[in-house]
Image 1: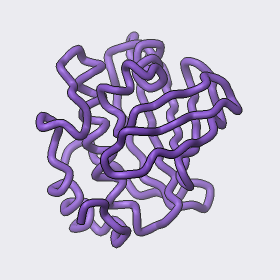
Image 2 (image 1 turned 180 degrees about the vertical axis):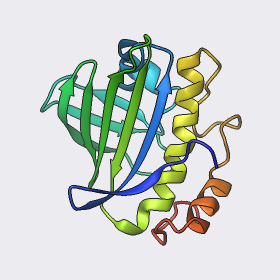
Image 3 (image 1 turned 90 degrees about the horizontal axis):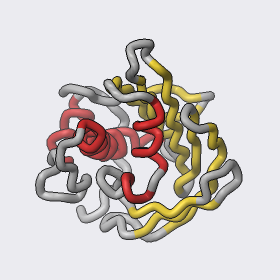
Image 4 (image 1 turned 120 degrees about the vertical axis):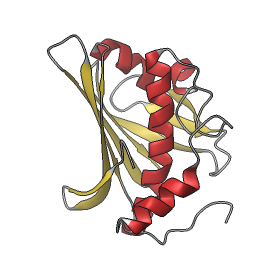
Length: 171
């Protein structure tokens, strides 16, 4: 499995962590992770947000979960973004590489340990779509027919020993 996530401890809480390096500056990737029109190419839900710490963030149109809301915890362009989504937290950190590009570190702090394999597989699909979008390729989103299939990724994460067992929507 390439570009997979890892199960980590994040301040005493279970989390899955991903890292991606792009040839684009942090400002380009920042817009991809904060602007609703760009999020539509890779994020699993439609997003509406108030771009500031303490701002509201709304999630809708994800075929696997009910609409919900959260709160933006950290908004420090173009470096740090943290927000809540339900009982989970999403952390995005962008660091310049020194060659004009940047590294994105993404951490999903989980509300339940047994959600690790399920969420890691989902974020692997989403981040593959983000990779396409940022590179200029067509990215139709993680629920599209052109996205990487979720189930084989989930099976790989489970086989690798990542905690599993959380309910899977649609199963």
